[in-house]
Image (cartoon, rainbow, N blue to C red; front, side, top):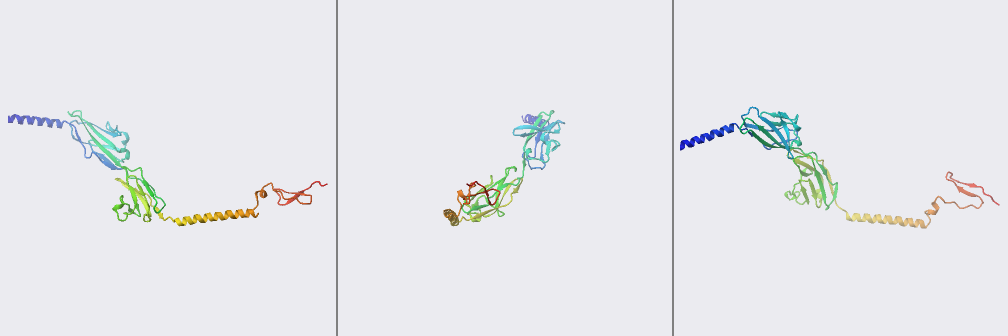
Length: 302
């Protein structure tokens, strides 16, 4: 019985080794590689076991669920032409990667002479893009006690960047209670949208502000902008309004008095049909447009 059992074991072991030797088996060193934009990345596809001397090797790019060839019939294809090479036996090396290269890539090897003639490996590539200079908006001046909103946005970075605000080169914490310097501040900071919102500005909030957009590929800052904070002088505003009203009232009264005393010409005396009163010498005097003085015209006198 023991001898029969050992014989059966060795037969199974031999069969397994034979099948394994004649099976195409792939592996990769990294199933989720990443690279910064414009770098070079290697998608490894290693053949651990194969018997076929000339296997068929293909690479496919899968983006939004749609596959397309990037290596077919021993040639680079698709959008990787002139940007990729195959390193023996089946590793794909991409140079000058761009954000459009972010996708899944599938290495497929077919070995017609092997009992297990096909194997594949799926690799997910992420190309990280450094943020560009964000667009920042900072109010020029805000009265004490009033709300204020500072905005920051950037649309090129990948993955989506997070935003940080700085005042006078000091980072503003996401939670003001975490810093003794900001514990009395009334702001909220959303690091995903880049919005810094003050519910009631204080005098201490005056300063030079700038925003930083940052992800795994790097960061970029916008230019610093100054936000002034001023007090509202209620008494001064009231006094100013009263002075303006009094001045306008005095001007109106003065104009009315001048009309009543005849110091200002009436509409009847300033029109284009105005005629001077006739003289008693029997001669009519008229004034022409092109003469600065009066001239007379003869009239028949009986």
